[in-house]
Image 1 (cartoon, helix red, strand yellow):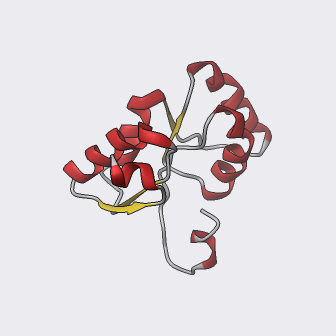
Image 2 (spheres, one colour):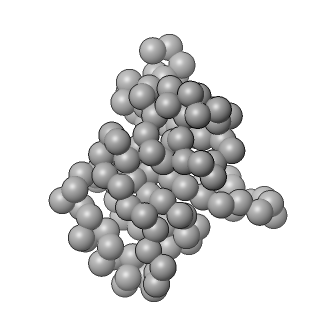
Length: 116
């Protein structure tokens, strides 16, 4: 997302934040980019995630999905033209496959999905 902010190109962001221990950075990114949809790793993060977004001044909450199914929904979202996958390990394979099935351009940011 930091690369995306360097361009003056109209973009809509739909994304899945990093793992559980990186959720703080995801809150800042969600507040900055105002995605339509976000997927978080674990359901026990949901209320804290929403509260942190409100504390950052986010008034229009994105759709917040949870877990592997959430990652898949984000990856194949109807408004996405391209899906960037950088999920560590083979966990990135299902969302990538579903994005391909949905006709999305794929931008791989990890090697595991490529070789799996």
